[in-house]
Length: 366
Length: 179
Image (cartoon, each protein chain N blue to C red):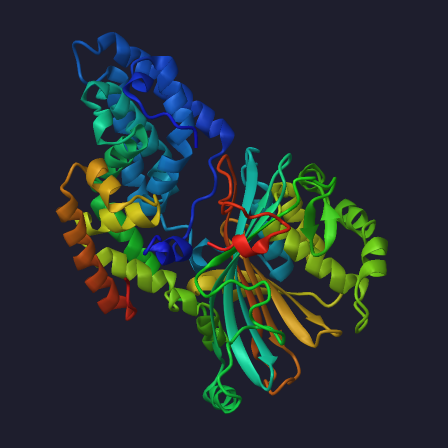
């Protein structure tokens, strides 16, 4: 286990390299290697090498006066919230397009605060989705911990006999790994045509990668999925099509390999939904500065905020709070957070324990 | 990652290209997270050029090309130590904006002990260069103690003692147990 994983989680990451810049650097390095190869027997440092060193020195001098990308100073300056969001969406669209590989790997950390059996618990977990254009999907769920939310909840839990804690009303043993262990859920080897489940909408990797990059076209495309979703959804409080677009859009941002242009279109589409507010500066995960899209859901009685890094356009996560008190929790209580971790294409494969199949989850914990 | 780990990979330009393709993004990211993107690409390129020029010194018995590249990159970062510390100090000054649910946010992030970018940057700035190297090779590169010893060309015990000191400093500054 990586004991300093929290540093990897907390410190700002760097965006993928622009493929054109990589090609330039590669050509320069190989060119210098060619010179170097000729002189290998005689000199340890080529003429070109000095040039690279000079460039590096110059950029270090520049770096001294460069303000880091993170922080309020990095936020775009613009007239109002709408213009700020436009600038952030432009930055999102300008991010390099990831190069497709074996699996799309997307990790998110989830926090839930929920009332179960007469007391409120705080529950943490980490999800990693492995989507492939050709191979079966693999989902990983790591339980990180569950505790009573407050001293009052702890007392209620102890009065109930201190049963095992989890964020479920049902038996905690059902399909849940022990704390700090990971449950792997591989799809059947018979890969369905649309193996992705994006807010319960079945999609294919290629289909996701080719989603429209104009907000109005994206909205129109997503709405074609609504009839099937609304027919299949469980009976419950009325979920409007806007509620659904908000949830589907946010899931697209961090779960699947949409293009940078589609990511920007998602921001613009969501910002245009009725009742959505743009908040220029809020606290994001790990103390980062974020811009937020905020929307109240009448059917859930919550306000959720999609948090975006203003300096890169990357999604940082979601924070959902109660608008009205419920289940013994006052209004304003944060009941869900999603913190976006790494998401990238990788040529590595997920670790699937020996004997683990979609029909035998007993062997799927590591 | 493509496994390109033997000496033959470095003997000619074509194989050098394969080494570049297999490792460039990872090395650039490691440098970028320590020094910022402004210098990451140049230093990543320089890492590969140095590797190619010094290919006669590569010892496959001490680990693969990836570890060797991490060692070269870490040495290059060492030349920019002051820039790295300035970066951390700048990040440490960037306090979070006022927020009405900051407490809940800290609870939600309890698995990372509420450690913020600002606090962690301040803590990293206080580590010695050697301590920071081993901590960040684990955090960003996922290297083991043995691999770090090979990459940096130091004894296993040196890695262990640097980590021990780093844990103590991080615990003192962050107020959380690092174990």
